[in-house]
Image 1 (cartoon, rainbow, N blue to C red):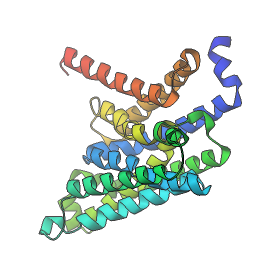
Image 2 (image 1 turned 45 degrees about the vertical axis):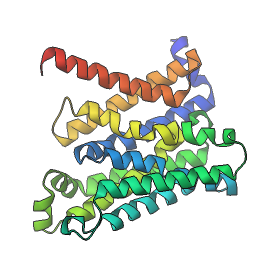
Image 3 (image 1 turned 60 degrees about the vertical axis):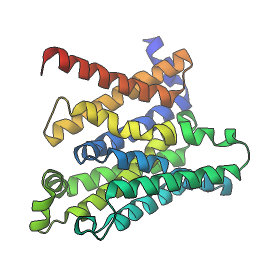
Length: 274
């Protein structure tokens, strides 16, 4: 028992655990919609397009969370505007738009990094530094998680219907494009939380991998979300233990464990033939 409780005797480990669980909850719940709507590439783009906002915030001494959120909201709006009307041949296909915005914003972040001193000064932005989460970061993550959960509850029927049949959702006045924009904004919030834990490069894995694992065992939305959160939290808790006792980078260890759980689940499904 003493061995199990040892890591949590230190305040920074407890803060890191709480921050990880909050970010994991946000990403796991929203990741179900990301996977179901085939928006994994959008999640990848959102994680990388936080970079210019993060770099600029660090250089100016602003809040990293606010910098990342501003960058992500600009990305979400840009994707929605540039791809609007694509089905009527008046816009660019969404995957092409995401690719352009993704690479452009990430390149802008790299350029800003070149003006900010040593590349090592920004390594925690790329790879995360879960053990340096501040109380203000934690409060922001809790607020983002509450906003995501409340939105998913209030718009549960609309989001579910537009995910299953976007055309029918448009016919009855729900507005599939409007629901997609809401999902993109929520992804922006979830990604900001994830960046605090695993960094720019690995956030998309925290968003997609648990939900992809859950998709192998459930089809209905609520069970999908429950399994996704369980996978995410398992990877987080075990990953922090391994990080503490084996001196491994926390963010990368969490993501690697989530990927390992996915591979094990896929292998088990292949063996049992389910």
